[in-house]
Image (cartoon, rainbow, N blue to C red; front, side, top):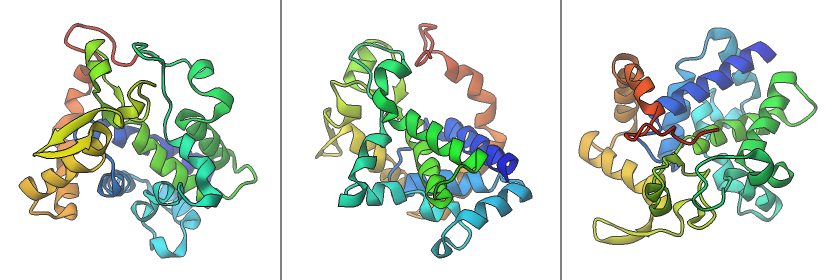
Amino acid sequence: MGLSLRTWVASIILLTYLVHGALGWGIDGHYAVCKIAQSYFEEETLVAVKKLLPAYANGEVAAVCSWPDEIKRLPQWKWTAALHYSDTPDYKCNYEYSRDCPNDICVTGAIFNYTTHLMFQIHYNLTEALMFVSHFMGDIHQVNQSLYQIQVICNCPLHVGFLGDQGGNGVKVNWYNQETNLHRVWDDKIIESALEKYYNSSLSVMIRSLQHKLKYGWSKHVPSWESCPLHQTVCPN
């Protein structure tokens, strides 16, 4: 099962990388990422993952992808809130684990921890580990362009942002005459508008469209995403 889960983790990384420029990750975004990723599973991977899913998921990873968001405000799970992000000092367009993930309490530390549990079947609730990894892989690839980051030509994941803007939560914006913050726009507003405008408010239609674009369109553009127009590396390290 270890090999199958390694394949699964690789699938999640690939899918979130390919679609991160198009979507924000609220409930619908996380569902879409995991739904698409599962469609790329090999049979051995699918069998291994389904064994770990709770019964209510009905064999669908997408059904549990938002679970970490749902539980992080509950008293017994408040400690997990800090696992959803990692902040770097303002104007530092790089990431240093020792500096930015104190005591391994951050999203990258969480991914390392839970993937280790899954790949080597370390004694832990592997169902929880699966649900955390499914969610955090989506979080860490969600693009963010805050005011600070635009200034330094840095296009970084929303959940790996600057201390000063709190991952976009501190950046106030207007979205179609509605006052909100940049994090909320990426989490929900963009995808809600896209669903209504392009997909007849149907998440399943949107997912099928994304699957088609992944297979026949976007994959060839991946090399061009590796650098900014000024030839600076996007989020080095």
